[in-house]
Image (cartoon, rainbow, N blue to C red; front, top):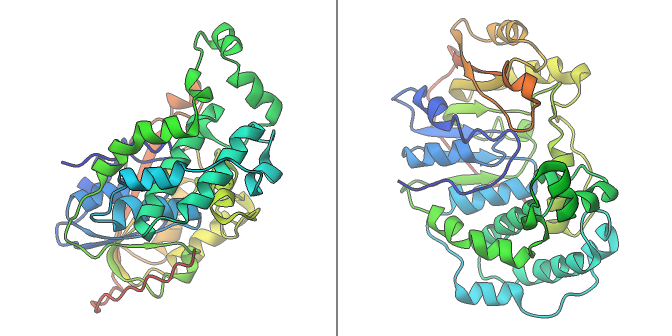
Length: 349
């Protein structure tokens, strides 16, 4: 069995992906993972032989999917590594915009070099693997594994002596090089690539642009959990900036704002007729509540059930961890009509 690599993604379903996939009906052959994030659920479903269509609005999440789900055979070899790390660091986009914002100036110059070199790789799958590994390296160097800290706090937490006095851990990995982390994880990512003999597809779009195009037996919905620490653009948007060499802007339809969450969910549920089964992951600490979501789902199907289990997220505090429950809403769509499944990879990078 192939193994999902270390991705470090807040809200990742890695620990419960098997439990979720165990609930899928046996007649299902295709899955649309509409908010794929770190792709742990898609990866588990790929291991089980389903044809997978992933989507995420963050470009780095598209690249994770392209590297680990769509990609059936392409690996990074010794020649690719030489290409990525050759040359002298220079003052480019990352240096000009993020020196002493998230990384030290020399580190930003290294990122500018690596970004330039990744573009020289021979295939999109190789580029995606390189971006996924560079993301892992950037995350490993960042305290709390997210880009929402101010520079003074980052410097403080990267001070190994301070970390030892405060937390009894020096966290030396924060000060190891991008190259060190990249190479340390290379074999794990290469070994995660496998062929499940399906035409898996990765999208990079707003979910509402795809619901009339993509058709699948199952749609799995794992949107940001409104009312919790769920600002994924804030957590990982910097990696999109690195990929595009542009300062990207927060996206709409982001499920972050309580004022628009119910309207967004209702809009989402109203557009799911291309899918026979709907699976929605949500959390008891989030908004809307379980009963509110049951009401919204009940507008579109009379066949709705919800199961639950305890599930702790590392980002939550100790008290909340003891009370966390993960809900899985399961809907059979009575309005579903069998159609020929046609999917078009329309993502633009």
